[in-house]
Image (cartoon, rainbow, N blue to C red; front, side):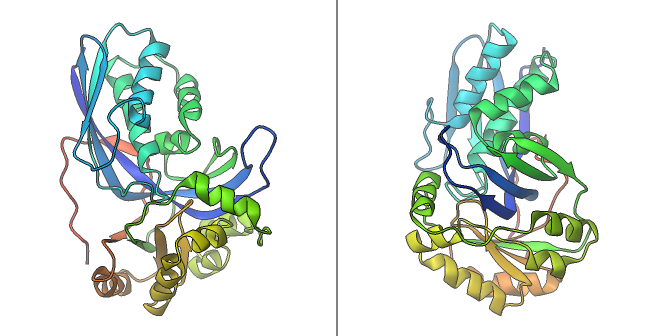
Length: 302
């Protein structure tokens, strides 16, 4: 049995996010179009005799059961009946608490890495079941690409990957935003318009980026705006720089601008980089995880 592996764990953006009222099960039913993007953490996994240990250089990230990657390792080893432990090292590049599913991506990478190291003992359906128990975004991060997510976010329908052309400029203001806090504020506010999910999916399949952009709605934006007032100004700045739309990803605070011209995107990123701690030009990608042999921090791409 191999003892080590490294996995790239890719971030996601929400091209749309519709949310219903809080249900009796404690969850909001959602309808989301999710897209994997080329921003990633690298997860190094080493099989050890016993126990789960975790290390990371990221400030404020727990290294015990408070980290979803730690819980993913525990859940996997238990389900696989493995009599071993695991040491996990997380090299972060995805901002924390940013609406980009960084923690979920790390957990998905741990599941995939341990599955590889133990010789693929679990069927894919079982692996997705573990992922769904860990968190709403983990199943998507395990599969990635472009997908419709419904229910609690764990019911996935794969969609054709995005065609070549569109790029995203991601802007994060460096202010972590709690998903629970955003949903709590969402529950206090009247619901806004729901996204035209079917229309968005059709426009994406037709590679009609402007038609798709018109249908990108995130129902959590008003709630997040009230908690983090810089979000609307980032949207406005991206639109002023030539984005065909600018929307918040997930529960925020990261905002993406959709550009149909890479050079315009690079110029926008250059101008916005001085005012925000995290600005990247990122392309959509067809997978949520991929093999990786060590972290090379990506260039700023502009």
